[in-house]
Image (tube, rainbow, N blue to C red):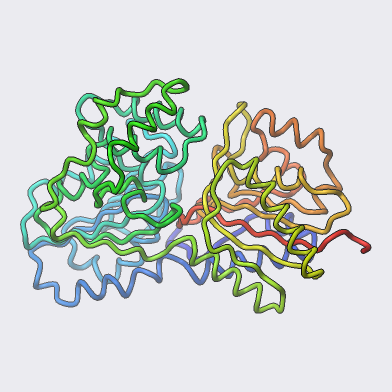
Length: 441
């Protein structure tokens, strides 16, 4: 493609658009992605720090994560003429734009890092080894950066990091648990990139994909010291060592959080986009249509089995009180245990589990989407389930799909998997539910 595309392109919009509620939801999703596109969000911040390029001897731009290309596109007008080196690491398979001759585009693997990730990470660091106080490094950080930007600490290999991450994810570890282990095994996470870039001025622009928007957790916090102590790290080892082959507590603690605060003296980080921005905008767009909306203030977390039941119970309870249809909009990041070799992810599975908890005479719609466009090992961003979906499938089909972790295949069979490919952004997951009570009542 000649340009980095803005907004959201739902490739199977026509197939999904089988009801008025579905069509309205898909249109609202497209509008939200258009308004919150990373390309346009970076402009003001970079303009501010580059108001006088004479203040810097050299300017460097690096980025890693699922939104790296769009984030770079947002800073390009301000940096392409002055940057000595510009490079990003993106997921292998993502489309690369033409005409960006000044930008080195490298690829890595996600969600499990590999040798390709390590080679790309070493390459992006090469020009940054001997920086001076009058150099500037702009770092573009987004979700997925934990797997796409990685150089192991001494004593560990990229294969060890990948195997550990895969086992922890399959065992239901949450993002804080997973990233604590990653920070200890990595030479560029948990603030260690800040040490590499010292003594240059460093500005990190961040798109948050974690509940709570903690910069020390996003992409495993390359520019930020861990705010958790070794006690939390040791607790993760105790919790998962029965399921996963983990390094010892002593091996991990040696490489965790031991960074002189002086290395962060000239590091500034700014979150430019977060999950709640999407949640609030989607709620506003629905409300503007004259419909009742409940916006969830707290991030939704927990196992998909429990979260599905929680959404159903909340919707039914709200309807019983108000006796009018209601929308519920929230965001966060759930966990799902992998129990088979099928295709799916936490969003596909959550949408299917909500449907499993509904009765066939209930008027409902539920969508769970990964804003990066890729849910787990599936090619979809998530799924939509509703009364229309229940009419076409059976409880047995749903249970069998969940038993082998193959939620995507069933959703796709009934035109309920949302296909977008990589979206160029990543603020974790969005949940949208509509409930109108029992039909005919």
